[in-house]
Amino acid sequence: MVEKIRVTMTPIGKLQRAAEKQNESLEGGMLWRALDFLLYLVLIVLIMFSIRTVLIDPVRVDGKSMLDTLVDGQVMIVDRTAYAFSTPARGDIVLCYYPDEYYESQGLQYATRVKRVIAVGGDTIETIDGELYVNGEKLVEPYLTPDRVGGQYVRAQRIPDGCVYVMGDNRSVSRDSRYDTVGPIPFYRVVGKVRFILFPFENAHLI
Image 1 (tube, helix red, strand yellow):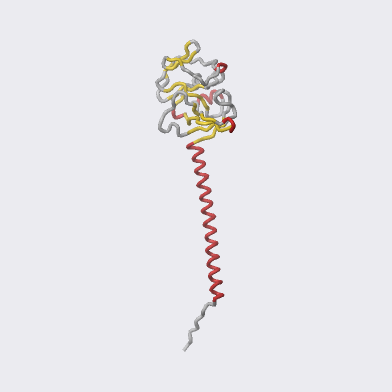
Image 2: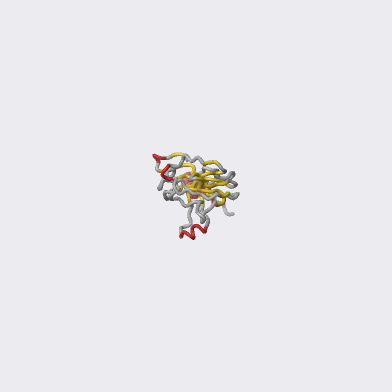
């Protein structure tokens, strides 16, 4: 008869095995923690990218067409959701794309333009004796400075529905809806509304 030998683990052996299991657990835990951190980082990047491209957009002012309201080099915050459930209103400062023909005719890079909405779909607009009239009433424009009013001639016209008529605050240098290559801008080419001047920080303010 073969006697069965029973092997018992010594206290030291038990401790060693427990330590090995703990080490395996820690190794697995560290791996999962690393993956968890990586996923968290990716999520943060995606959220920031979504905010940047869908919700708000910091945009640098390029040029002098919106003086003195916007100054070349300033960084403005554009709200891309502003017109999700509404349409641009007179007086809004918007970021928009001009018609493709404008960029082609001027040999310019396809890029956004920042302008002020002067009239909306259904409005009539014209210049009378050097003054701008919308729907038969003289337009009050407190944002204009006297030395930037020149060159604001606008032919009499009705703005098509679903469009806005835009102009720069520095009328003498701004290429805008007054030009045949631009004209009224369809809503779908309006990117968003300028809400805030962010930089320079000492001049930060709401629009």
